[in-house]
Image (tube, rainbow, N blue to C red; front, top):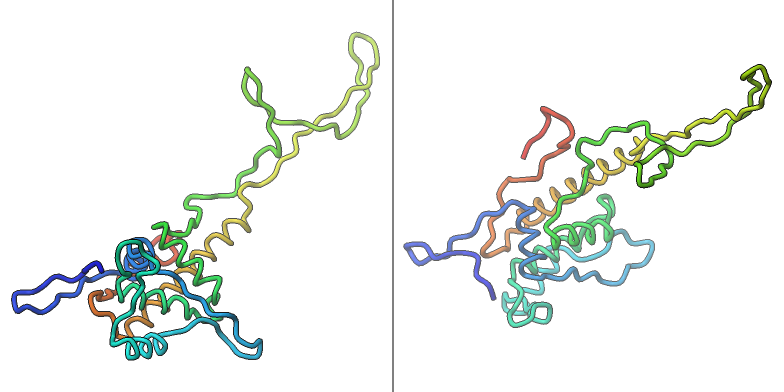
Amino acid sequence: MSLLGRIGRDGASVKRAMGVQAALEWAFGVEKAQLELPPPKDGAEEGFGFGLEYVLLQRAILGCKIDGGQHKMGSHTHPDAEVIAATVAGMPDSLGGIRMAIRVTELARAGLTPDWMPGALPRCVPVEMKRNQHGGRATTIVVGTERVKTRGKWRTVEVLACPVTWRPYREQIQAARQAYDDWWQALGWVREGLLAGGIMREVELTGAMPKVRPWSKGRNRS
């Protein structure tokens, strides 16, 4: 089992302070904690997973130890990491339930923050480009014909136009930023749940949070 805390001068264990995102990345990325999701309950019941009450009960049954060795080769998963995983598994439906729990876990395991498409602005661009050894050019389509007189003769010529679109779509940007905001709310819930439970031994959660709405200048806080 890995040890997070250090021993103080008085011999007592000193907790390691972490923000909730760092704690999640440690639990799922370093300790390889697993997201144990129980089978869905009856449709009439709300919510899935298990929360801190379950963890407390299991700790009492197991003598205050949680064995996660089956998930981590050569060692045991740290009990605090198991607590974090159990808390994430209890994500309420109002915040996305199981899907959000899985999303939070996957991002933490990869050490990533959701892509909120920084700097993205809808731009008018050709629908399709053709490229050759001389470079690229926009694809055109025939939208009509016109009669023109050239060199004393009337000829029928095609009228060409370049189809354009907006990329990225405004809806794409909005969706990416809504997904980031949903993830941020989920992390806040996890943090509050872990603080309320107060059962982690070597991890002490700080108030640090990822930036809220980083695309809104002057409104960020960490």
